[in-house]
Length: 314
Image (tube, rainbow, N blue to C red; front, side, top):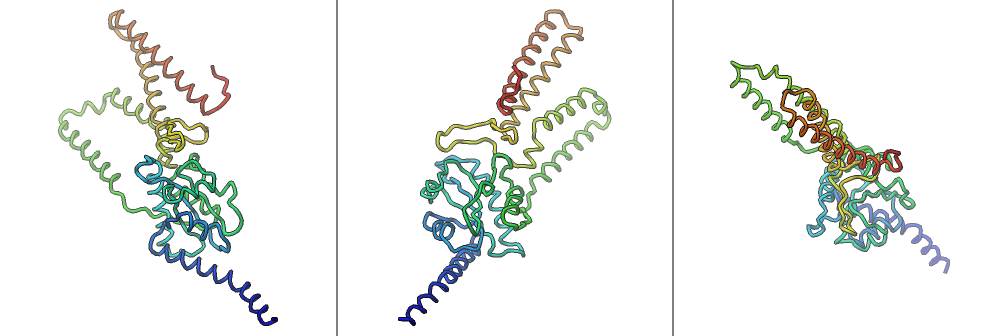
């Protein structure tokens, strides 16, 4: 009886370590075949929820099937794949962190288990304990660029990942075509380059640059936010972010158009006051200018109030 009891005690002591080794081995095998491990409900419960576990699992909960019509999910998945591949093929790769994915159509029970009703969502499952609030990635605030997710992963796991993107020749190609176009126009007009001294051309170019910068395009380039947000439960699409700490790409386009309309109204008012046209046309320009300024500036304030709740403007 004492011998059987000692064997049973040894089994209890060794079994968790053996089970852990099997789980780590299986995760490493999956990671060697695919940087992002696809999990269903059974795999999620066995390799993520059930102890023992000495590794962190970064999971993207998403809905990639075409019938879900989640464009943001596909965009986020591309960035997530870049991050996971950067980690998988780096020299610092270890079994400390794994990247996984749960698709709604393959693991709807996992979504129900976690009371999750939106996608995409990134959650870090630490080796011990349940995920804390900071273990859920603030997608709406930080965007889904691979570099931003990598910083969050470093904060939660102390694993620093250098994001390596595949070469993209679209940017240099477009720049080259633009320079070639400008050079061709300058060559064709080489005997008449007075347009380079045209104030209106330079004023219009500067105005376009100011509108692009003030609308938040640089923020989009740095943070990589989604174009819009579609609620998977109601299907409603939001083009304006409800927080003052984040924005959608569509929101910046709307703001750019509103600012451009206000600017056009101001130009019309200036022309109405200073031009030599007949009085009738100047009155029309004045009314149109006032209408554009009042209408689009009020819409700009409406967006501002929606993002900064309780702001005292009326």
